[in-house]
Picture 1 (tube, rainbow, N blue to C red):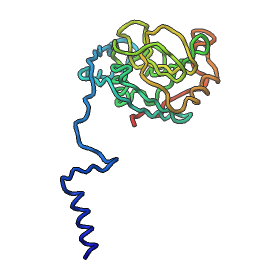
Picture 2: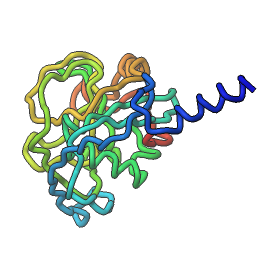
Picture 3: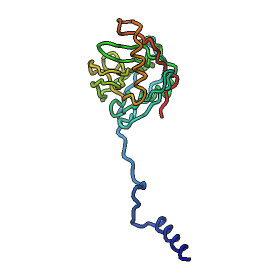
Picture 4: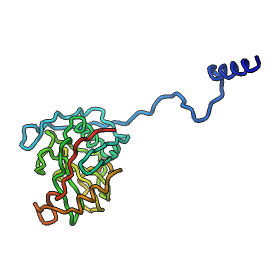
Length: 223
């Protein structure tokens, strides 16, 4: 009888509106609002070397929060952590292109091993000239500080020319701050090192061309 009374008392306390708070338990309340920006994505699907992907909506684009991408490659898995606060329009576009499967089956087309140290990817034609069928600017983006592990958007070094191409820095590099930083490689940077160590098939110069060791994305997905 005493035991039944004790058990009843415990359930009464848990189910009532008592003022005692159990530490470590969730407390109801409004979620903080995610800041947003407006982005403009310009259709260029009729231009040569473009894959016709419909541009994403540019309204209420999140400018905060992180997104993790998993990239399944023939050399192993990569993980990208993208930061919307760093480059909101670019991260929004990247997520859109992942959803549209633009990067699936795509191989990185460029390796630079002197002056700057990058592997460049994301061209659906692998020619270095291709894009997703739209262009955009990212005026609020963070640029500069291209250190090892950074992922940035490749463009023509002028405003409004971002597309689908991006680069991965495998050794601290210095070049003009024209390229939005979208995040960092948080897993698999050793795979990028393998590609860099294998060397270049020269195109522009002896140290700038196609990677000898192919890095091909079998599947890219948001976690």
